[in-house]
Image 1 (cartoon, one colour):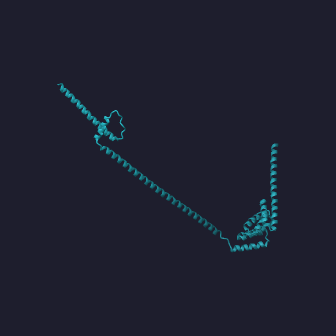
Image 2 (cartoon, rainbow, N blue to C red):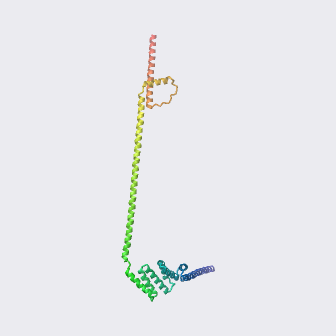
Image 3 (cartoon, rainbow, N blue to C red):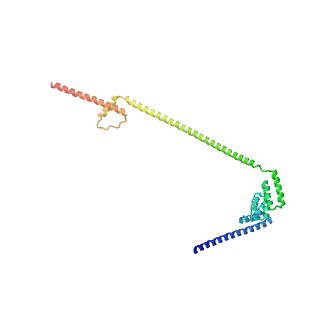
Length: 304
């Protein structure tokens, strides 16, 4: 139980220490911001606006809620006719809760002047009215409000409906332009696809034509080869069979045991040669047999 109490007291001490440290840092930042604001005011009185701007910016960087620095910087921008910067700084100053009623009155008054310079008369009227709420007795603000109302009467803002219609028409025109652009892109893409398809078709036709030419050349070559083979066979067929027989006899006379050289004749020619050899051998055998019979008969007669 004591340990738990000890730990709780330690956490509480750390929290208090951290809170005290944060408060000290915030106080230090506010002190530095006030110091830079004073130096900015001094530089502005000495006609050193550049140096004053630097000091005011330092003050705002240290404490963004420093309404005095925001107001003084906005007023300086207004005098330099930098109305956009003046508007931002005066608006920040008027929204702060750390300035007096008189300071808020002056901030809104100068902010109204900035709107008048930008010819935003409707906003100027509203801002001057806000300034009079903080100081209803200021005649200058009341006069500026009257001028702003007159300028707003002479230059009324466009009706909200017309503005909406204008914005709608602009949006419609943008959509139409986008649709037209999309259609053009699609048409261009379609044209490119058609051109590509046509090119592919032309290439395919050319390939088919080349293949047909190659096939025709191959067929012509095959027909030429067949014609040469036919002529070669025909020439061989016209040779004298007796010449083939004589060649066979010569080959047989030179020796039957000799190994014949490889023949380059076609199968048809080889078959005809073998047939001729068989016929020749048959005739020879018939002659031999006839002679044997004749000899036997002669012998028989002689015995008789």
